[in-house]
Length: 379
Length: 243
Ligand SMILES: Nc1ncnc2c1ncn2[C@@H]1O[C@H](COP(=O)(O)OP(=O)(O)OP(=O)(O)O)[C@@H](O)[C@H]1O
Ligand SMILES: [Mg+2]
Image 1 (cartoon, protein in one colour):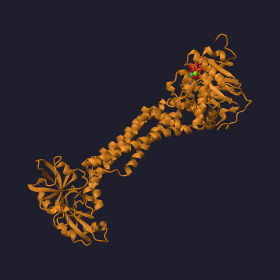
Image 2 (cartoon, chains in turn brown, green; image 1 turned 90 degrees about the horizontal axis):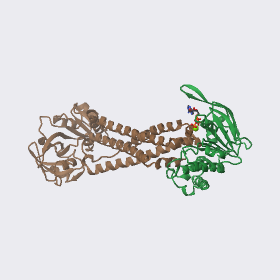
Image 3 (tube, rainbow over the protein chains, first blue to last red; image 1 turned 120 degrees about the vertical axis):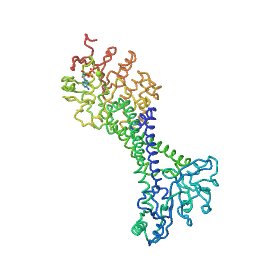
């Protein structure tokens, strides 16, 4: 009977494809939107995770995230360094600026100033150029986004000149980092350079990055720094989460993506539910005949379950494949999608959503079939 | 699965006593069958005729085990079928009764042989063996060339023959048909009736057919006429004033 159930379903090409497409489309929509959502949120933390050696970020108590910063006086550095348990502490600069390209265009950038002597704060991997080049006068590194956005296609960024705050900057390397949440271009330079590139008032130090001595956990160190200095100290994980929370609280992103995911779900139910109930209705006479002939309700249930399950499985597989291809090609070809990945939870969540869609439609369809009196076949 | 419910060999094919059936219409129970008694012997081809609305379909539905009577008892080959639980009744139908519907109700996406094999498949017979047996039966119904075709590739008469094969493939002891020839022309209709007699009726098997096709009345062993929910004539021929 299961064979018959499958043939009933696959034999009706149009409805079968419609059902598979509906599920695949829902899967694609839900998976893809959840992936973009999660990855965008995680970009609230890329700048923090990009600096793997810093255990603790120290900042002014009102600073909220890496991009909403109230600078501290330079004395903060010595304050932090004097806290017992601090292995090292370096200044870190982060602020917005406007840059003029060689072509004369103006572009908003984030300037990151890393410690002059240790270069702590600079992402480790380079796409082009060598880390040591940052020590040369007027050196800046751009990120991948910047290498595409600040220069006309085909032009090598290395050696190009930029202008910041009437100062000259020469691009001497491209660093390999995932874009930030805003996908704004990031320029890396030495701390002392950064102060010149971005005009400012007396207090300039955005963060102090610190590492704990052996035997002290980052949490313990952060607590100790807060107690001794009166500044805010966050462990790397905490500050990364702060960046994510800031996006959640201050943008419409969660709602927008939530709506799209819900739409994927509803469209799935609508397309699949409608097509499946049409399919069942078209076959209701046949189901009635089977019931009269002597197929009991348990087998009818199994038949409908197999039909719904088959559609769900094929559709889900196809949709996941499409979503994966979409995300992989996006991550490979577009700077905006660089580093995008699909955590395993997303396919699982999608699978659950699809299972719910299938269960609801299957259940509705089954009710119609089970309600059909076998006596109805003679009418 | 066969033989779960033992069938008495000496019992009449159908023995119903004092059957009534009500339908609730507009909140009121309307009686459409009135205290019907009827015995049908094995080996008989019985016609059930009567005007539209007289209760023919209701009666054979009750005989076939797909519609509960409001009152009365139905014995099919000695089994009180409405005394069975739901599951046993379904099984009883699967093993004992063959159905032919006016609209055939074939599954459009499987071929003729597979359609005819459905009762065997439902009984749990291996699909290939079931299809083979169905194909043999289709041969006997002159459908050898059409066994691999989909229902949509067959004429109405050919589809009805597939439906007949489906009703007979598992060798049920009772075959019930509601207007099996209504959609067929005179010649095809007559051939269908001939086939039903040849293949369906045997010493221990019976066929009961609802029809108002007076072109085939001469083929029946017995003709029952219904009027307003009662059997008003029972004989080997039609009463004079109606034929
Ligand atoms: N499910 C139902 N609900 C309510 N009334 C019904 C139902 N089924 C049949 N009836 C009524 O019972 C009566 C007998 O119907 P039945 O279908 O048995 O007649 P019939 O002799 O088969 O007629 P026809 O030749 O038109 O098929 C009719 O008056 C019909 O309206
Ligand atoms: Mg009728």
